[in-house]
Length: 190
Image (cartoon, rainbow, N blue to C red; front, side):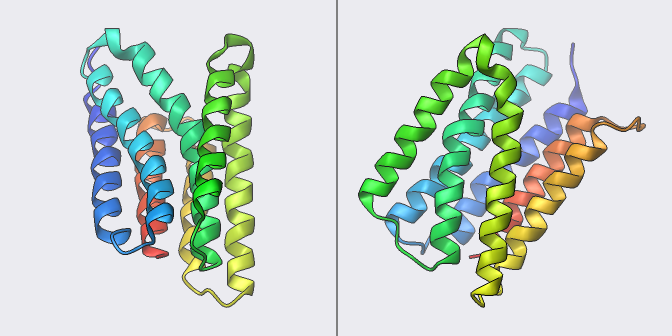
């Protein structure tokens, strides 16, 4: 079944991820940029697979689900450390990058098992909380651009609440547009 609005909103997410990476993260230190890249590329890949899935290529459903799980594990682990480096104005070390990616990939493997898939939403909620706490800590440390991180997380949080309401438009589209807005806000925090 073709769902054009969902395909379009996923295309917006993928495009925003790519544009934000090249526009905002071009001058960030290498290891920091690598972590931002992992986050943005995994989200973009999941969104790209979603475009084709929603255009009627149902054989990509499992690929889309797996890439979404990758973005929700390795991508989220990467963004937490990347935001910490941004807010604290620190260059992330190579061992930290390796540890972060290793943790994210181990989490990804666990979340692929059907028994652990229920924890995907817990991981996402916990990550939103940690990112919000880091951003508030950054504001306390006088990093004023951390307000963009707070705004981005709040937009995504509101979108998850909207998804539970009965609205005339698709909650999937609301989530996709909120995700794109959050990514843009993260870019503005640089």
